[in-house]
Image 1 (tube, rainbow, N blue to C red):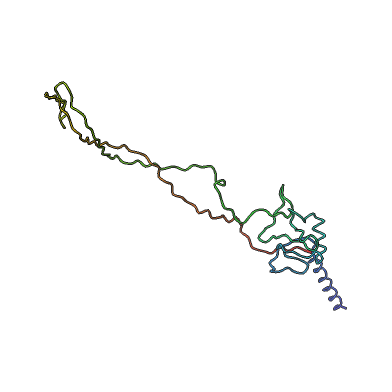
Image 2: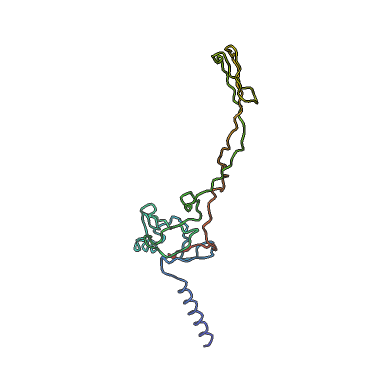
Length: 212
């Protein structure tokens, strides 16, 4: 009698465990399994036959989850339908303006200038040192009238020398003009590489299952 009671109890326990393992059609869960367990499918975006999973196909229609902009695809329109692809995705509560099952976000982002806060760059200005430019010109002009020529001897004061009008031939005047300090802008060295930023939070990878 005791052995029969023990066997009945074990059978009852296994029945309860089996029933607990069965979840309603459409429920999803994460798993470390590399493949789907009985009564489930991986949510990897694969196409399946409607006839093979009639309860799941009916459920996605009842929940209005199939069609354009919805997580399930219509497949060929008659014999198949497409499961959502939740590989690399985590679950979060549906927000305002979103639909249940909608895919949002991305693993990475490449920043552009529009993503940066408003800012300015300091521009460096360098002054050049003083320098001279030699200027040479050619002239051909006559002397000064009234019987005299005004001469300006180098390194002395003006003097007046009387005599006949003199005519000076072609000659050069050499001058040296001191340059001014001039500013010029120092080119800024380019920085950055444009590499995308990894936005993924710390996590461990799992497979998503859906009960059929």
